[in-house]
Length: 417
Ligand SMILES: [Zn+2]
Image 1 (cartoon, rainbow, N blue to C red):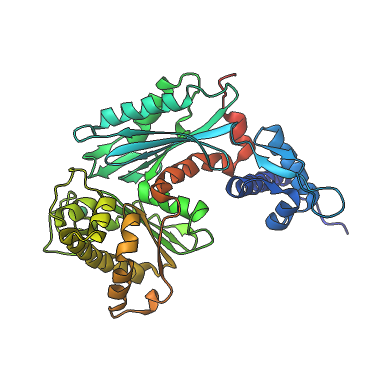
Image 2: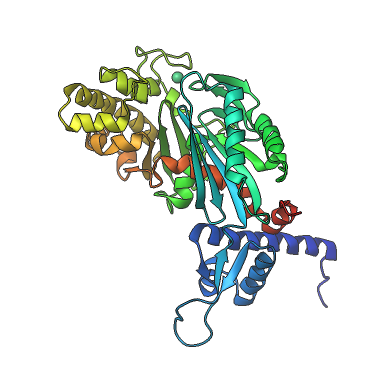
């Protein structure tokens, strides 16, 4: 007796979901890996040749990819076509809002940097309205020469703040002096006004914590590719962490996990901008390092200049870095005990510090009681330099398109429409 066939409606939904899932796999693959032969996609994604061919045709029809004949043939038979992401056709805007400047970029599908701008934020110019105005102006600058058929898939913003992922509402940004500000909603509204020929959907403007986005970028494109358990440290004026556990970002109940800069390491230490005393960032943030070297925060001293002064024999600089490495070891040791990561990535200004303090931090960490979680951990600099949060912001902006390539591509207006 033949089995009853499932109701056609259910089967149709499942087919659609399966197709969307497979389109997502294919587009994500070439977004992260670059141009790839169909034969490689068949092997890597685990779908047969005709399915890959059909999916590629769908993505090509939406202008997301194109297929090219490879320049060099490998072996006999018909050459396997190369699937190439349409870098210019689909682009995102990425912002890394830092305490002293805004880094901004236009990034093409495939994660390719196409244009960038930097806007300084001097003391006294970090007010909410002023920063929103600078972001709006920079967005206009980055998009004014775009061809008509280019589609903006979204805007991603990295911010040194405790931020609600769902709508980009900033709960607390001590180093910007902001508290409870509707950052995501305000920015979306301002961008809508600033770019009338490129209408924005509210959900395409996404905001997240800078360290979380640094971790995302290093995990997808940087030094943490292929690693499942990673702590990314973002060290500038403030200090934060993005944590990847079992291959997934650690979010916490409200999405606010990873505020390691406010982990108390020295209860008798300095008062922090958050109100507590002895937070980790009061001991290892840039201001702390500069003060320990006998200089004044804001006098132009950078971590890089301190490291080079220390290497040139400046005793104050050397002892400041020694002191910092002591507190770095305390904090990193705690994080390693809690998360048992394979990698601790030093991002932001901490990247400059790592070569100088690496050996010291490792030996101090090893001097503690619990050694099992420290057995395999490596301390490494971020592969994307200080741009990890910027590239993470671009990934955030591309996420919706990568999840549902055709659905989102069809919904995006172009300036030509
Ligand atoms: Zn604090």
